[in-house]
Length: 291
Image 1 (cartoon, rainbow, N blue to C red):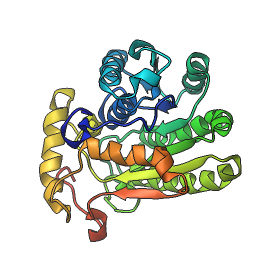
Image 2: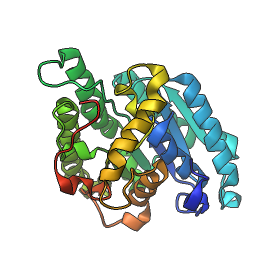
Image 3: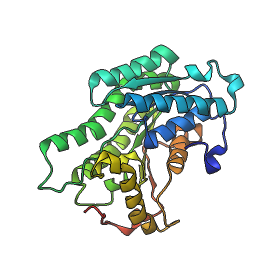
Image 4: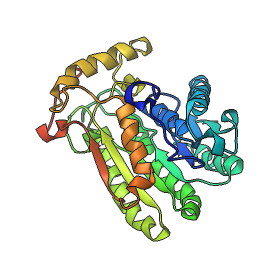
């Protein structure tokens, strides 16, 4: 979490900024929300699990209290966060996310499209139409329409968008064909939207991490009670394959990269998808213990 290790540092990079982070009730999205909270942002959190979302909001409040620059904040920590429960594949939920953000905070500076789905590993023969549609709807369609809703507000603030992709967009695993295709589509969408929105002063970038052990691995787990065990098994298998450091990235390292892209430090960058993988995609295709 945001208070560990090197990330005990804090700054005012996002003081007064308003961010939406989709899929932020756990895992990587929650880590991004926590870091934004510590650095002074107002954040709208979203997720399908109401209890996890409430817990994430409380953690964000704690991070906000621990952050620096609180003297310049107009709201106390308890009022700096909004939670919207629901699935981003639902158009009403997407609209509510943006509407609630504007209603409560009055502006939008940052949109982090983090919500995504990875189903159980399936190859060509095993993939159902339902799985195909769910992956594409969550990983591509929902992100497109979130941007569509947010663009008018981001134009007013000269804000920016960060799309969360995956190295599987460029590295290949036959048991993740549809997921890989969805992330490749998202990378292309990132560059297309960057061109479309540049005249409006909106930056659009992406980040493609290699495997990071979080609840996002639940699509690989045989059951809900095996999620943590599966995450660590995957990390033990894939970690040593990373040429640099010989381990998987941490959620904190992922958040470092996202916050850089969302900050003014990246003000001259748009249409770029950053690879966060310690060099593993340089090796080409990789196998998987579940495959």
